[in-house]
Image 1: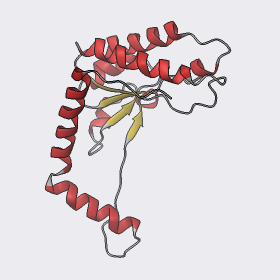
Image 2: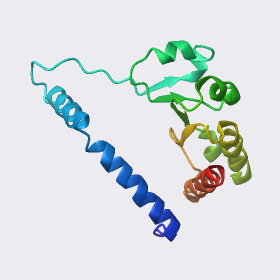
Image 3: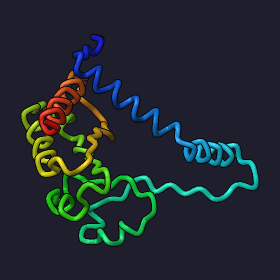
Image 4: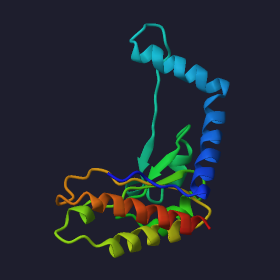
Length: 167
């Protein structure tokens, strides 16, 4: 297995992101939340109820941005490949992370089509523009047809397209 090679620019970007993550994680509110979650996980009595709504499926909420706005601390909205991305961007803007989980079937087909993977990612990122926060997650993979390089290639393509969209 080849180790991942990062450019100086990639390393600087990762360092900046890690510093931001560490600064937010060090806020007093996160110590309190960590203690509350630990109390819940340890099943110790007396803690207040903990609720975490991590992600909402946009295809079920299309046209209901006002409802989403009433969910406290909502961070992500899942924008599947079957959603109208342009509508999600128009209605949600930069208020949430738009979480894109491409269809993993592209990795399971008899023939691997990296150009189609690139096109689908590019279409989403172009629609999201620079006003939206996005994440790309390839998940629920059942097979890569004994060709794990498909995963590495998809990852490389996703990074290239994300970098292109960010500039």
